[in-house]
Image 1 (tube, one colour):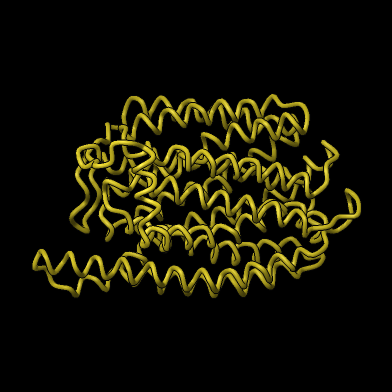
Image 2: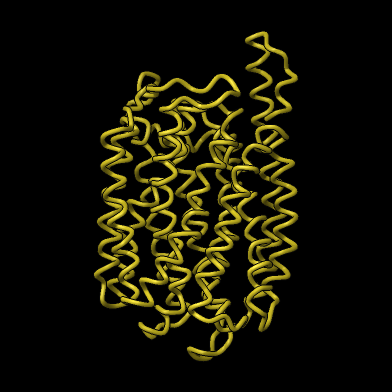
Length: 427
């Protein structure tokens, strides 16, 4: 297994590959989830379902992902992380394929549940691998590259997915994602090295005991709460983003891919920059600034009426910049909470609570949003914006507590090693 980075110089060749393969893995998993939003308007019209039913379809993935993460948390540190990644990624491919052949709303919901059971755990396994291979001072850069998978899904994935949906129906994007994921699986199996260092440090004999000991730690619970709060905002707005753009902003189905593409391109530029800044400057300060920016843009965007395409693109880029710029420093800080022997369990539980909180948010959003018929504007979308603003303030406070916790722990470790404490400011 490659050793963690110890200098600020360039990563090793294997570490670069690990970042690349995990980013591509994230690309396919995020795309599978993200494509539901631009397909929202098509699905509601094709399957003749209401916003509340569509919200349930989105929540089905999130709830199953959350349950799966909790069930697997106790086992997450008892196996080679590479084998765990392969197992759940293959299950994710099967679920995505089933989405591609579903021919009714109930079957689609069932396929989303299966996809969530496997796909929802992949992110936590990836975070555990990142924490094993890279030290905290360099995780901002790594997270910046990893989150580029999110941007790439918007630049390439979502526009291509929408093109396929418009040309061959809404099943096509899911089949395309499954095909790409098969290629990624082969690369993981051949190139990724076993990751087993954590196995020698296990003390809990049973999976349940390991799960309980992880949940029982107060520091960990602070991290869980912070992550859950941060996920609510995205899950509330995202599922109805395309329906809002089409029915309220009067954007056409053919213009929609342009918005996602430009927004994704901007994130590909911004994410690495934010990652570097997060490593050079205090991570909490970067998070707080991004949160303030996001709050302003969410209020502006959710209160828009019919708007020219160019202005929608600009505002969407500005809003997504704030949302994405929060993710890198907050994720980097949260990965600094667990010790090595608890990382897999911590990341699984953290991901589970994130998914469950997001599922509740999507379901609640579906109940808040009202649409009189298929072509009328969405009502109360701005209410979601105000709820997100309130939750964001609480989220800033929780990440502040996480930041102090990680800094204090790093300071104590530096004192034990006899290193200068001044380096702590860079966390």
